[in-house]
Length: 329
View 1 (cartoon, one colour):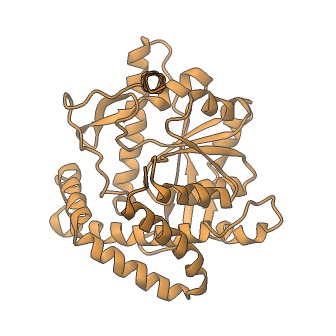
View 2 (cartoon, one colour; view 1 turned 90 degrees about the horizontal axis):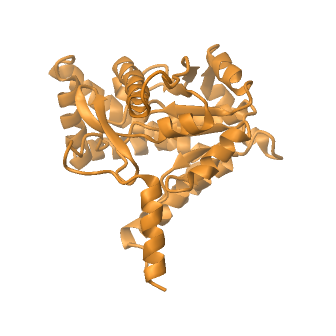
């Protein structure tokens, strides 16, 4: 079956922008991306972001502040896109063209808390890093790779969507593998067992994976249980990490690591999972309140309400897929 036209167009646009942006002066890129962000803010995504912000932080921010946060949020998204275009033209730090990624070292200041990540890695079981769609999570991965760490990130790869190949190619350019969300858990555990860093962005609603409704900014939100399942299987804690810009409109970022979140083994299995994920969500909530303009308010974080949808565990989905394949023979 052919890929939908809009997805093919989007893929060509992304790959075309990657190569074309290298020829356009920085100020012109800023102006173009900022204009695009302003237009998007006036559309459906802007409406969704405004509704989310009102329901999540409406009691904490007045209307003027909320509108400023929304404006800065979409401006921040435009800068993310420009950063990612540069990342897609970078190179691994241990390759023959390592200098192409030297700008990453200037763009990211490594906080002394990086010793937390180093200490976790020193145990020989890898590091299971969790983060949110805040700041620049792709730049964070690139900065960790520039420090000499190896590993992979888990990312969405939609079938019949060539535009999903673009973030995979971007990460590959600076030396990081992408493992699909629907991959076997064994592939994820192999990264950790090999002493690598496995990165998860875990503030999204993912209906395809096993999930649990937990509070997030005051509202029940479908939260994937995969981080807790991996932490239990690999016997490692979750390591919260973020890379945020120093202020609205600034290009320089700070990468920081927080104390690991470990499973409470004194609790029953399901309760331990809920407890760990709740603490993870609370960490993200604190980050969002500190820099609300750097979180992706335009995502469908609260699309599903409790009782509306039963998430399908990964192993069950694999079983159903096998049955479909066998039935089609």
